[in-house]
Length: 122
Image: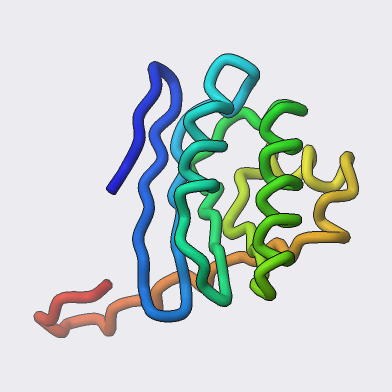
């Protein structure tokens, strides 16, 4: 399930314990409605994980949407986690202090494929 704007695409995936939200594009005043709608549509689970690896721009409107999602998720006893922000987005999270309130994690890279083996590596 996903939502798309002109400059922003948001995709939701739902598991038993985690709702994943993958965000790609620019989050600004013109596109934040797409992100906000996806975050509010996410079902209640212990973890709401927002993948920011595809976000090139995060404006103050985007930060406010993440804060609102954090408050909403915390109200139902869950946790918002921000994953893999681009260096520019990570600077915004640090400058606003959001990284002190919401966990920001880096996913581990896939292990390298052994040389000479003909197997599918992730």
